[in-house]
Structures are given as structure tokens and as C-alpha cells.
Length: 218
Image 1 (cartoon, helix red, strand yellow):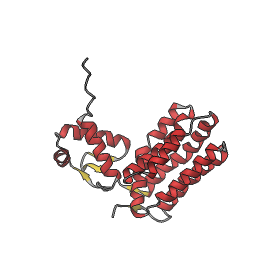
Image 2: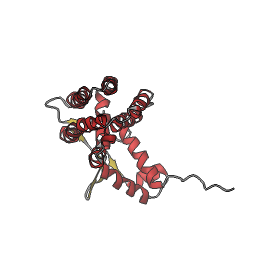
Image 3: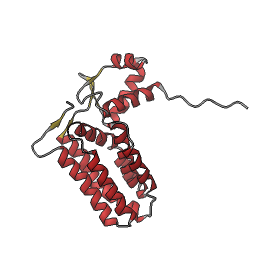
Image 4: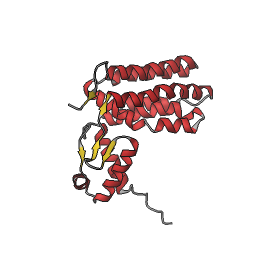
């Protein structure tokens, strides 16, 4: 009996994931131009999948498209970080309360914490951290609320990655994640929601102290 071959990721998807990984590890710095011909040569593809990948990344907020400057990696500054984290502060604790109130499983959050501890680089750690947060808000019972938080995930990851380049605070954040999970497992909805709010807020204040306007990769 013949079996169909496993699907091969499209060239566009391949370029998209490769560029995203480079952005989230600092291989491509904030503000750096993303030249289609250079990326096509780098990844061994034509310009068309590169162009489509950059459009998709622009939609997630990692890339900025300009008629005059072309595509560049999004620059992280205090205004951008506050916009993204204000959304998280408003929505994530409320979503967590709903998830816990519905008796959602916390096993995915536990697994995400383990992956973060075992991460090989900043991109993997950032991805695992995003999955931890997503596992807490996804089962909230409101698909629109979950989708709104999904829409800022990549931008939040960019903020954290750029901040980690100068203030590598992931161990502190991992401890805060464990405390959030502990409270959630104990059924302390108010405590878990408050700890999540404080976790998001404290990271923003550490990464962007008052008076600081931009973070660039060294």
C-alpha cells in the first residue's frame, strides 16, 4: 500500500520561519533593512517567497513595510512596548481568570515551562514563554479574546528578545511563571491573576525604565 509523502513546508513558510528566528535571536537587528535579493540568496529561493514571507511578518508586527525604505525589522522603543504590553495587561489577567473559572487543564502550561527551562537559545525560550502564556488564556471560552491576544504574541516576543539582549532577566521571569502556575494549581484565581498582572508589568518597567526611549541590539 502506497503512502502519500509528508507535506513539505512551502518556500514562503520556510523563509518566514527562518527570518522570524533570526529576528528573535538578534541575527537580524531592529531597524535592519530586509533586502529581498539578499534574503533570496541567503535561503536559496526566488524573491517571490521572500516577498510573501515579509508581508506575513509585517502582518504580525515583526517587520515594517515602507514604500520608500522597503522592509525593515521593526524597531522596539518604549512607545511600541507600552502599546503591546498595555493590551496584555488589560486582557491576559482577565482571560486567565476565565480559564481557571472554567476548570481548564494546566498541563500545557507545565509542559511549556519545562520547554523554556530546556531551551537552547533565546528564540526557543521566547517561543516556550509565549506558549506558557497562551496556554493560560486560550481556554478562556471567548475565541475573540484569545485571538486578540494571539495578535500581539510576536510583537511581545520581539520586545522581550530585544530587552534580554541588554537585561537578560529570563531566570527571574521563569520564577514568576512558576509562581503563577503554583497559584493556579492551588485554585487561587485572584492570586494567579494578580501575579500574572505583576509579572507583565514588572518586565515592562525593568526593560523600559522611565526616561528610556529605545532598545537596540548591541
